[in-house]
Length: 235
Image (cartoon, rainbow, N blue to C red; front, side):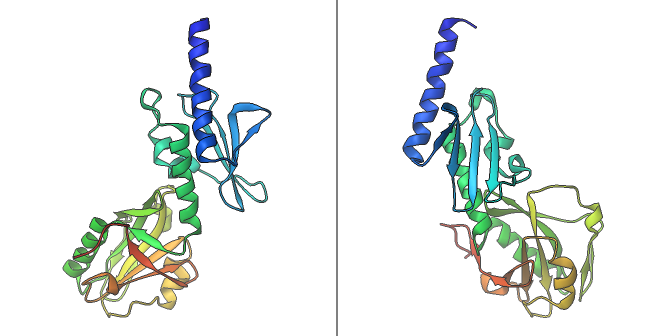
C-alpha cells in the first residue's frame, strides 16, 4: 500500500471517529484504537463497533448487561443490510440507526406505517366476514410490511397458519388478524397459539374503519398502544 493511500485511509478513519465523538461523547476506544469503539446506548445495551476497514462494512456487536450478543443484528439494520463500499454511510449515521432500533425494542408502543394500516383496514373490509391473518415485518422500529403466511387458512371465526412453513427471518416480529365479531381483544386461542411466538400482535376489529378498531398486544396479551408513524395520520 502506498504512503499516499495509507494516509488517506488514516484520515478517513480519524474523520469518522471525530463524528462519533461529537455525537456520542460517552464513546470509548478499545485498546486505544480509534477505529474500535464501545458506546453504552442504554443502561443495559452496549454497542461495540469496529470500522478499521471503513468504507468496508464495519463489525457490529450489541451486548446486553450479561455480555450476551444480540443475534442477527445485520438483519434488523437497513444500513448494514444494504452496505456498499462505494456509497458507505458515515459510522455515526449507522450508530444513530442502531440506537433507534434499540429504542424500539424497549418501546411500549407499536408504530406502523400509514399506508400499510390503511391497506390492512381495506383488506379486512373486503374479506369480511372472513378473518384475515398475516405476519408483520419490522424495519427500523416501524411495522412496514404485511406478509401472508404460507398455507394460512381462515374462516368467519378463526385463522390458522403453520409456523414451520415460515422462513427464518428475524425482521418478522409480529402477527395481525381480524375479528369479524367486533371484539378487539384476544381469545384464549390467540394467547396460546398466535401470540406466544411474536414480540408484537395486532387485532383489527369490525367495522375496520380507523385506528380505533385496532388493538396491539405483546406476547403475553398485555395491551400496548398502536400509533401511525410520526407525522402521518389516517384520514
